[in-house]
Amino acid sequence: MTISVKDNLTKLQVQRYCELLHVLVARTLKVRYRGSFLGVYWSLLNPLIMTGLYTAIFGTTFASYYNNSILNYVLAAFTGLIVINFFSASTTQALASVVGNGALLNKIRLPVSVFPVSMVAANIFQFSVGALPLLALITLFNSKSLINVIALVFPFLALVLVCTGIGFLVSALYVFFRDLPYFYELITFVIWISSPVFYPAAIVPPQVKPFLSLNPLSPIIESLRQITLSGAAPDLGLIWGALLGGIIILSLGWTCFHLWRHQFMDLL
Image (cartoon, rainbow, N blue to C red; front, side, top):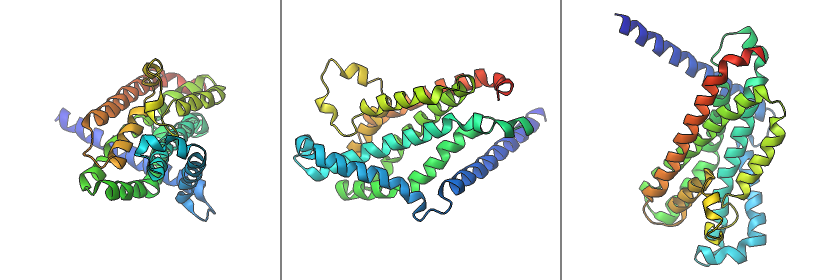
């Protein structure tokens, strides 16, 4: 009987969490795109413009690493840019989510973790209706295989895990350190420049590669490019490496968030 009551209570808590998450995501998207002409499709504008810029500057130089094809370089740069843009947007928005809702938390008892999660979820929706369909079409065109299209889910899942874990960590730290956004801008720049976004990973010197391997976005970008551009079957080693990194970061972020959560209300 006790187990049944606990199960029902858990189901109610999960249902309430999901309903609250839906409300917060809808609110975020409405505020973000109110009065906007293109709506969520504005998220494609930045990677498309930056892809054109990188191609104009580096396309000829780096095309040799992509079967001497400028088009392949364009697709590779676009793939890297949508990953880094998703990461930057999700984690930066999650950073301020707990503090930004401090007044609400002081009035109503809510699960604090739902706020950084809602920021990541809003960007998942934006990615799913914007960049993902385009990425799926590119993959289908290059690989002629639905397996590759379906396999896109796994590196994207790894990206979501990484963003959620870091979102938990930075949103918790921001409660204690209000100058964190300035420092985090530097961190996101380092992650961007150390990710093979506009350059191929093959040009990185061997002595530098061990340091760049610490970047959790690198295996995600490499896995997405392998699935999207190679035309070969998905590389399970790359997928597993990306997922493992995501699981580790999510575990670390959630642990820190959970340990520090009881101190939040005194500082909000």
